[in-house]
Image 1 (tube, rainbow, N blue to C red):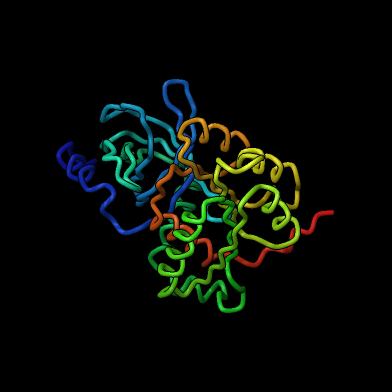
Image 2: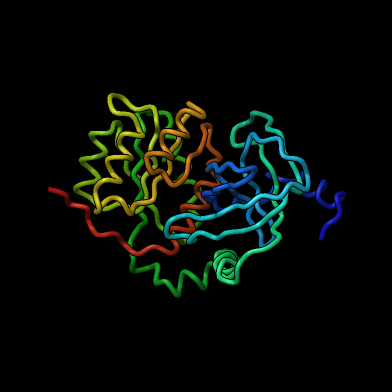
Length: 269
């Protein structure tokens, strides 16, 4: 087990590592359960975004997951470091959790995710990336600026990557619904603040239709806790506050693109 000095040094470096995948984190502590995001995953620790003022040494339970990337991994952990946000884009406050115990199955799932990260070229070859076509993402966002930011960032990030990704856009829920019911997508990114029907309403509609319910959904918003609660309750797999840590999101999309096989068109009558 690391000393408190080691933990403090590690905590001070949180956020300075290379981009890593974003995961859904379900935390249980003090009789309460809440859903947030996690990143900076290693074989023995993870950074979890939270406003809770948990002291070093506090024990919690956390389930880490993301559809098509990692089935739920249940972990007993303890707080070994804290980070207070500086309110810079992508710099979120939270705690560093060190793993105490997990099942053999959970350990295997975690190791498989991390092994793929360190041996990506071989993984691509095994999964036949050249013949699967691009990973298709639908961005439901009414802001031209945000769309252009995504499009530019994805083009720049994936320019040197072997994985392929195609970004499509809908400016409102109805346009998104038309696209979702006539085309095939692998993941949907939904802004909460949309014209007419909000993002939570669109997500709830998707979850009621078997042909769409399987799609991973990342909700995004500047609306904070209200948007987080509404979209996660509607069925979103992950909620990200704006401004988003684009590098980590793109790294997650790259990992998903490595592993995917094309979805069948979701044509719904």
